[in-house]
Image (cartoon, rainbow, N blue to C red; front, side, top):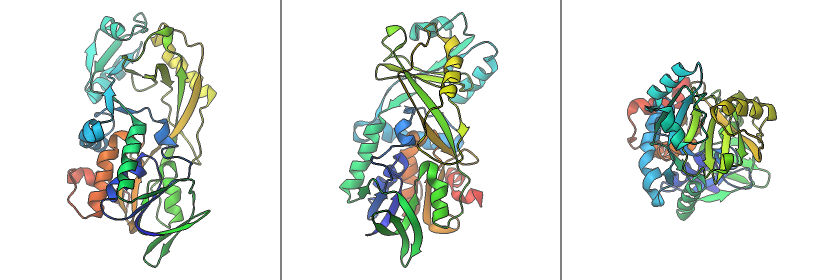
Amino acid sequence: MSTDFLIIGGGIAGISTAARLSHLGSVQVLEGEEALAYHASGRSAALFEPSYGNAPTVALNRASAAYLQGANGGVLSPRGLMFLAGPGEEAGLEADIKAMDLTPMSLADARAMVPILDTAYLTGAAYHASAWDIDTDLMVQNFAREARGNGAVITTKARVTGIARGGSGWQVDTASDSYSARILVNAGGAWADHIASMAGVAPIGITPLRRSMARLPAPGGHDVGGWPMLIGAGETWYAKPDAGKWLVSPAEEDPVETPHDAWADDMVLAEGIARYQPYVTEEVTRVETSWAGLRSFAPDRTLVLGPAVDAGDFIWVAAQGGYGFQTAPAASQLIADLIADRRPELPAGIVAALSPARFA
């Protein structure tokens, strides 16, 4: 089974790259789990916020906006974003206002929008409407359909067991088959450095960080569908509507030494809910379910996109952090442009800031 491009990883990074590269040649995707987008992609907060992240990430966000809004009918729906401060958090809120281009609002207006807010505790609030929910499942399926429509083969339950250079490129082994390709694409998420090491390519130093989530009943029986996402100043917690329920996250970033199928730590969840609780009047009495995902970051917290310095036919599409879905359209387009030797749509400075060469 020989192809032009072999992509390891079937999360949003891998499947969006497969769609783009399917216009340039034959593509094989290998996903170790039973379904696409099983790990970090399947556990995303699913928000498109153009101003979220550092400068290279924001550039990718904004370059992705047109695709997210319009391609295949679009995958966005209105949500809005509200940051909240409690006692002693006013400076943190001011920093968030500047970083996220928020508009300060009165506590009365904030409570009118989210009636469970405790204005006796709050010391500040800020909001903007420029944040949207992402239909992540639809987005994955749109990219998968595009890839398959151009002949790409997507194989699940295909955990990689070995990688070696072959006569005309790369050979990748799974428990049941072997594959060869001219170019190898590393979209392995939390396992990206492990994949690089298997291939004999220098790892980047990508760190998986656990983030947990609890699903609660709708507070006070309210219809939460029109409420914005709430974030504590400095991102110490966040809460968000989800299919009639209410999600609360501790917004933790706990390093994980060995990538694995992550689960939520009960104590971490309890601490996060305790941080959230003073901001609202409705007491949290029950957690319906919980989960966790591994958000993977490079040392500079910037995505890693492009050919490895020590192997030009090994392509990094990694370290998406918490920005995978909102950057995927532009990130995958950049990879296709680099491989096709086309001038990228992104500015040269941004391309350099995303390149693996910055770690050389």
